[in-house]
Structures are given as structure tokens and as C-alpha cells.
Length: 253
Image (cartoon, rainbow, N blue to C red):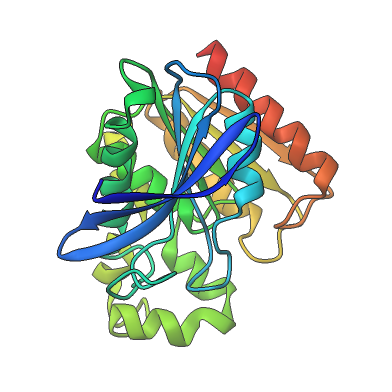
């Protein structure tokens, strides 16, 4: 951690903006710490979207912090004054791995379990982080698992994907495979909780099915929570319920 500046404080939690190093870049993120002194398990929250779309939600950090977790959410390179430029689960996934190290070195997480939660494209970042670091579990919420499928499903993202990969999935198959954690799922050795809305219009439920199937085939522990009527962004009531389910699941593994 390079520097930490307080954003807001309440009787339950304090939020800080943190600047840390990822590769040669100074990257920023939000750190939430429960107000009561002590040590707590940690959650690395990996946002979805790109640039300002899908930016870190402080409400999510507050919700998890108030449930008794230290939470760190990187903004990814090039955002909120950070250096560099995102490349959609390419080299920028190092921002997630280094953010995990930041979380691991916070005094309030000493000797505690550390979990990783990825929303939307953040799921790719979360799964790759779990392959490189000693995480305790992975939560995938509305998550991407196959980048070729994303190209097929999202015409609005194709121009960006061609830019960061150098072409289409047929022209640059290895670039899409490199961004697809399904191909390396054998390196996941911890429980995975998959949450998805079956009417997700941004990341189809097929991503969740493929991830679930890949984990089952390798005998990895996996739990699913699929909502038949939910789109990509859940209702507030459903969101609160899922947050509670995540906390209960973490406590039970």
C-alpha cells in the first residue's frame, strides 16, 4: 500500500481511498474497515464494467464491512486518477492480484481468511486471482466466464474487444482464451459460489452454467444461486438477500 486517505466515517465503518502499485502503475481503490477495533476476514471486491461504467459501489463496500469484513475494491488502472489503461481482463488483471496483496497486508486482516468476489467482468479477475494467490473462496455474481461467448453476445462490446485483443475470436483465438478462466479452472482449489439472474441481459446465464459444469467436472466444491426472474442488476431486496447468503456461505465453508 502506497498511501491511504479517509473518504468517510460512520459509527460502523471507515472508508479510505488507497493508492497502490500494480506493475509500473499507481492504481487506486476503496478500502472499508469495520469501526470496532480487531481483526476480520477480508473480501476483495472486483467490479464489473469498463472505465466509469460499473464503477465501484461504496454501498456494497459498506454493506459487507458492516457485516464484519474488511473490504478492498480496486478501481483498476486508468480510473479515478490512477495510471495506465484498462484492457478488459488482460494485463489489468494484475491490478486484482496486487489488490489482494494489499488486502492481505492490512493489519485488520492479520491471520484471517481472505475471499474474492467478482461481479460481471470482475468474475474473470476474481477467478484468475484465485489461481495466483491463496484465497479462501471465490464468489462469482453475474459473472463472465467465457470471453468468446461475451463477444458473441455483446455486439456493443465487439469494437472494444477487437481493440484489446487485436481482432475477433476467430482471428485471435489465443487472446480470447487467455482472458477465459474456464481453460485454467484446474488451478482453482477453493469453494466457488455462483450467483446469476436467469434473465441477465448483459452476461447470459450460460456463463454461469459453463463455469458450474467445469468446476463439477473437476470435483471442485461449487454452490449456485440462480434467480429465474432477475436481470444483470438485482433489485435492492434481492441484493440484500444475496449479501446475507454470501456472508452465511463464507461462515460455513
